[in-house]
Amino acid sequence: MDIVTKIKEWDRLRDDPSLRGKTIGFVPTMGAIHKGHLSLVRRCVEENDLTVVSIFVNPTQFNDPSDLESYPRNFEADRTILEKAGTDYIFLPKYGELYPNGYRYKVIETDFSKKLCGAYRPGHFDGVLTIVMKLLNIIRAHRAYFGEKDYQQYQLIKGMAKAFFLKTEIVPCPIVREADGLACSSRNMLLSPEERKTAPLFHKFLATDLPDDKIRKKLESAGFTVDYIETIGTRRYGAVRLGEVRLIDNINLENE
Ligand code: AMP
View 1 (cartoon, rainbow, N blue to C red):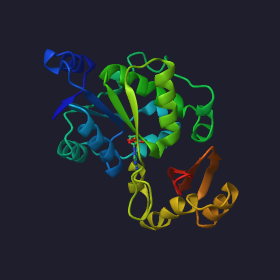
View 2: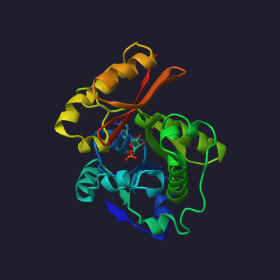
View 3: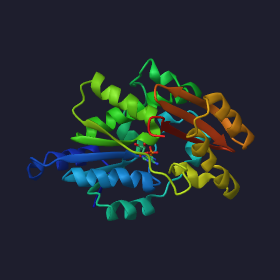
View 4: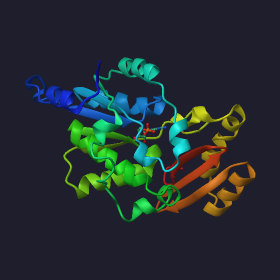
């Protein structure tokens, strides 16, 4: 497994004649690799000749500086896990490599990105779409894998790829959960032992057949601060906070 930090270096590898006819799969991440990320990497390895995983904690998608600062980073552990899973390249760029002109140029979606998480994290999806556009253009993969854990993000990325005629196929992957139902997330490791015990109630209540406002009340009684619980079509979305840690999840109501 090789670690690539520069776009020029990747371009040389990507355009090497030995890669002709080979399929490239791509998994963008912010690191602190867990079982959820690994399910994407394994699927990518299965479906492609080469797998590229990027690790970049993207500052432009954090609307809260303390959230960016406390975001878990653990490159050495990530490297070992990703290599074992069959990753061929880790793309590990620095900020200046990806934002050569700062954040003057952005990708903005004007409708769905303002709802749900977008209403509580202003500018978040501008940062997400901008970095994903940059990464997709750099890596030039045949397929890129995204988790349904971040379902709103997945829908926006799929929409962006269609709107801008991107060549990379956007592949959704199911949510991976801990045995107690809590969706795997890099942020889970920031929960105190007490908060970790409460956290699975989020998924448990979200998956009931109660209306959104009743679920909100039950979560609040259990000690969560609720940003939103909202059903759109056949999917129920939620975002809550336990202390300083923000958790998101969603449920396809047709499957419950
Ligand atoms: P992140 O590092 O949090 O930006 O996540 C990188 C990718 O992994 C995104 O496409 C996420 O949706 C996906 N992902 C994170 N957690 C999970 C999970 N529990 N199940 C499935 N995919 C996930």
